Image (spheres, rainbow, N blue to C red):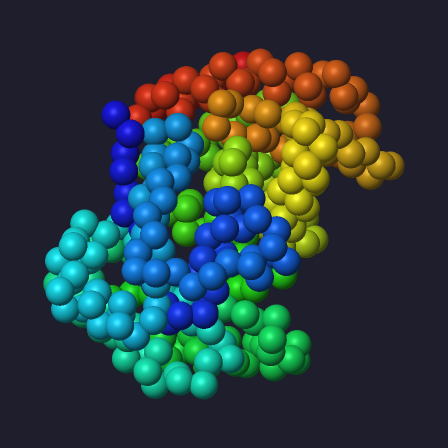
Length: 310
């Protein structure tokens, strides 16, 4: 049976909650989010993620009347059995005190009803802050939020819909919800070692969020995962506009070859190879041969199988 997890997306009106949800889960591109209106009350969406993991995403409208209702008449309904609270702050907000007050009211309700919930704060619209100020402003906000969240722990991310930071934040959040992630990573490591890859990434098929990876060789760009998510998702959307479906691609130069291919029914895989003596066909056969094994892993809730070194 599917494993349903309740995810609350909260923050004041206009902070960008529905825009980010639409980009990650509903195939919007950033400029299309301008036509989204304000969210009225709570919008429920069910996102099937990795086969039997279903995220019940509640996008909670942030206008004052709705916020007051969440903490009073709807309190038990909204805050019970919450797995994750994602609270979005507009970095340019002129009402910081009010924002923090609502955030703390949320935390009180979580502490009462779902004390084990994971809490994430997104300091959003960072593209509006001057580049040389971003680190400083984010660090200040993060310190404030961590202090205000006690005794609960919160993890903070800086985000913008105009770059890869949105993918980084959501990948990190979803990663913590995958039940058998250690097992997945162990198998990915074995797979990478068997085929002599520099790096292997696993993407969730619909969102293109990175859910697991293994690297054998140091790579220079620490933001490469979310950049790839962003680029391939845009490319996939361009394909769908032409009524073509994106299946796979190979990028090769004198230093490396990268393969992106459908892997299981819920994932894409990316394999990076730097050994020029290994032909493309060999890597593609290896990907094909590993498919069955990873399909089996996804079907078993707490997988007992593992890919063994031969």
